[in-house]
Length: 328
Ligand SMILES: NC(=O)c1ccc[n+]([C@@H]2O[C@H](COP(=O)([O-])OP(=O)(O)OC[C@H]3O[C@@H](n4cnc5c(N)ncnc54)[C@H](OP(=O)(O)O)[C@@H]3O)[C@@H](O)[C@H]2O)c1
Image (tube, rainbow, N blue to C red; front, side):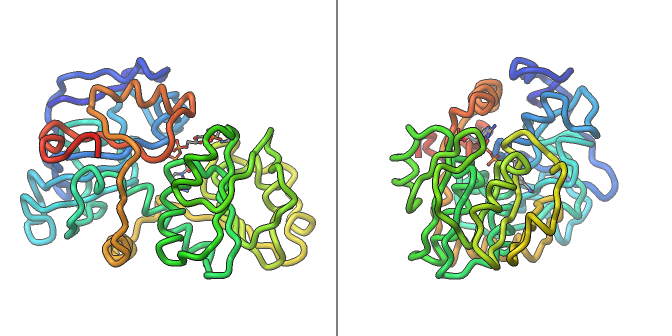
């Protein structure tokens, strides 16, 4: 089969298209014919060698949508069943979805019924699942004033879409370091756009809920813009910092401020079903920002390295592309 293999950590050029053996079925695992997958920032860290559990060579890719090709669970995962899978060490401890086939433990494969085409479906698993968890974590209410710190990310935009579907009147502000993205962000539905300059929000405004995607690099600044009884949900690390040093919880969280998180590593099948029901109920168009081919992955990673992308980018395998207009 064709796959993008990383032989050693490095820049986007280490993502190499190769012919490799198709994975062999093993007990408790099933083989998925890959129709598509979303590309994630965490795959950049893995490619760069920053994922401690990963050894090379490795096929990256932490999420997948496709069809069951070979099964060890005829009842729950029959051949031909549409499935999604995400996380659970796919693309880290074992080979991932940047390929024509991926072998995954049955317990982390989720059968779904959906009317979404492959491109839209490929945008959902990791990004919308995390955004859905973040929405729950923030305990959103219609009257909230929400800030998405890192609003141009795929995750930030997915969160905006979910939140505005449920609460159309809610004010949702985005941050970006690059103000030239402002008009695009407004068009996508953000109420207001604030510049994030050197880790400082260029506003005196406060918010009741903050989705913090830049992470530990800006959490303290975000807490300074949080209203009493407000919540900061720190879900990303776009700022490149993983830990908070010298964190004094009493001083930082005084005046009834809450700091929490949402983590897609803890996948719950019921929540996956709830997410797809939500998308269906609100008729969300989960159209990705870009649709690409397997061989485009070095270019997609390059653009993500340079932060030139806006929103979620997906790869479709050849066969899936035939049924989809690549410029939807
Ligand atoms: N907790 C979880 O389970 C979970 C799940 C999925 C993703 N995540 C995390 O969520 C974050 C978003 O993921 P994604 O895949 O949606 O990201 P993405 O689409 O690749 O995000 C791209 C945006 O990140 C911003 N950015 C890049 N470097 C930055 C920096 N040094 N400081 C501030 N902003 C920076 C850029 O915005 P501007 O240029 O416009 O400022 C860029 O447009 C990542 O940190 C990812 O690891 C966490």
